[in-house]
Image (cartoon, rainbow, N blue to C red; front, side):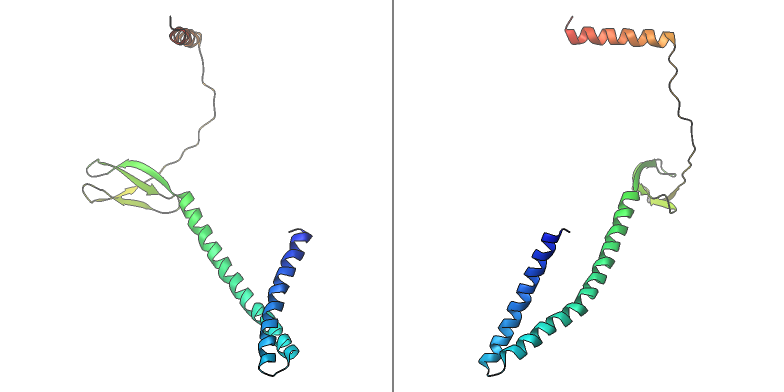
Length: 151
């Protein structure tokens, strides 16, 4: 936050506080009491309220933010899998998570099946292209060029 915005916000806040305190003091003056005593009292009361209410609001907001982040992480970590039922072989689209045991009830037979996952690592390679492959690729490109040109 830059300095200009800070002072603008500070002046806005002080303006509201002074206005409310002035209204409170004016009401007291109309009732026959001291304007300044009630003005200062209302001003101090607003700061007392802010010092109690702001930490409570900040705590509530941080709890809400943590809940939203947790739901976001859960939603982002969920993947869907098109998998066959172990009993009737019907295909089902089911959500899976990597950190739990995944089970699903089949939409057709209502039997419960488990999903077992297996991961392997593989080397990153480039495809081998032989002379015969190059010849076939060239012929296909030539045919595509002819089709595009309208001949």
